[in-house]
Length: 432
Ligand SMILES: [Mg+2]
Image (cartoon, rainbow, N blue to C red; front, top):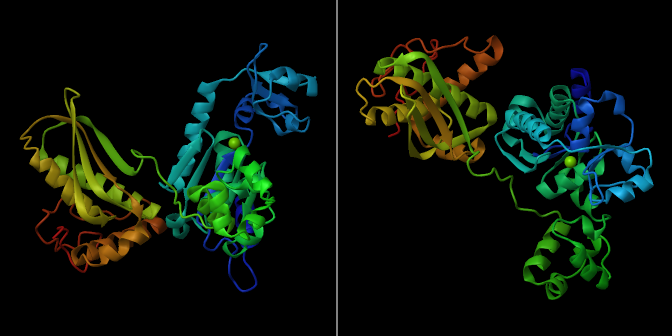
C-alpha cells in the first residue's frame, strides 16, 4: 500500500459539509486475517491462493486456522480434521508453530503501541486501540487505521482488518463485517442503523443459550431487542443481562479501552559505555531520559502520575524507586525533578552505576489530565516550552533543539532560557 492510497482513502471520508465519517470514532478493533495460516504463508509463498489450514494431524486433530480459500469449502476452525479433509480433499495441512505466531504477534503489538499506549490485546492477533491522543500527530482514525494496515503488511507480511467506531463493541462488529483485508468505519450517528438489522447473536455476551431465550421471546434482530421494554428483557434474562443487552442494542457501551496492568507505562533507560560514579553525569542522564519519556508521552497524547527510576550497580544488582505526583504530567522538567529527588534520596555517594532508567506510569489521556495541569502554573510554563521543542523537532528533526545548559538545579531559575532560547513563562520546574 502506498502513501497515496492512505491519503486518498482518508480524503474520501470527508462529507460535503466538511465533517468526516470517523469524527468521534477513536476506537479501533484490529484483527489479523486467518492469523496462524497467514504467518505460515509468509515463508511459503507457493501456497498463496490455495486452501491451507493449520491444525493437529492424527485422528483427533482439529483445525486451528483456515485461509479464506479453505473457508470457501466450508472448512472452519475447531472443525475435526477428518471432516475438513472430506470437505476439501486438496487441503494443505500445516502443523502449528506457536513460537512463530508469538513472534509475529509481538511485532504486530509493537506497531499498535507505536500508535498509542492505549492498547487492549484480546488475543495474540487482535486488540482494541484508543487513538484519541494520536489524532493530532497521525491524522483522523480512518487514516490511522490505514497506516496500521500498511505497516502490519509491510513489516509482518500479513493482512489485517480494522473496525473504526465510537465504542468497542461496534468497532469489533465492524471488523467482523469487513474481513478479510478490510476497513470499515461506523459513523457515530449511524450506529443504530448499523446495529438494528444484525441478528441478536452479534451482540457481545449473547451466547447460544441467551440466543435461544431471545428467540423464544420472538426477538431475532438487535432492533427487536431495542424495541422491547427493558422490564421484559430483565424478566427473561435477569437484571444484569437484560439491562446490558438493552443498552448495547442502542449502541451504548461505556467500556473504555483497558490497558492490562503493568503495561501502562512509558520508560527509557541507558546503559553507560562504562560504569559511572559522578552524580553530575547521572543527573544529566536522568534529565535526558526524563525529556525523552515526556516527549513520548506528549506524542502519544497521554500523561502519567507515577515517576520511577531504575538504578543498576556495577555488580548488576538493581533497585527501583517511585513517587506518585499530585497530578498527571507530560512535562520533562517535572519528571526530571522527581527522578532526581528519588536518585538523591538513595544517598549513593560515589557508587558505580551501569545503568539508569526513568519510567512514567499510571497513564491517562492527556485531555483528561489537562484541566488539572492548568492549575499548576509553574508546570504550565515548562509544558509550553517543551511543546515548542516538540514542534521544532517535528520540523527540523529529533535532537535539533537541546537545552543550552543540561543540568540546572531544580530550585534555581534557569535564566539562560534553557530550551534553545525559548523562555518559559514560569521558569521553575518545582512541583509546588
Ligand atoms: Mg483474527
